Amino acid sequence: MGKLSGKIALVTGGNSGIGLATAKQFVLEGAYVFISGRREGELAKAAQEIGENVTSVLGDVQHASALDRALRTMLPIGLPPPGTELPFLDGSSPAPVVSHLATCSVRL
Image 1 (cartoon, rainbow, N blue to C red):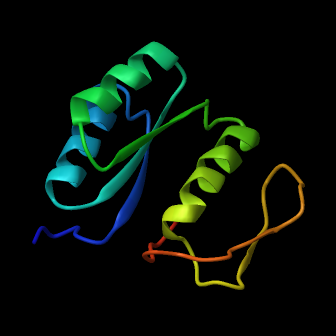
Image 2: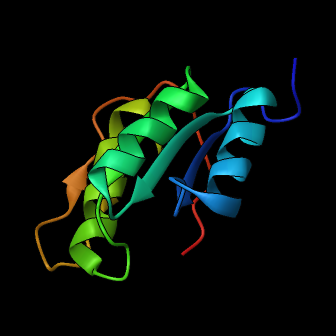
């Protein structure tokens, strides 16, 4: 069992360079990783290179809507406990968390 077994990570810029290396290492340590990036082709290639326990999310996290999309993609995997409402930066209604498989910490 790795140091990050049962953990979930969002790696921005996970399609290349340090971000990709970080995502690979997190998966090796047992984490489920979400990678985000601005270029669809590179993002798909990075996800394929990582192999398992990875989901790619297209978008530029400099924009609140892309960060919201990344967090909404993560919801089914497991953020806060059921019943928690998450406010989103784009001003849309809070999304209630219906169920979860694991718990993770998110620092913004």
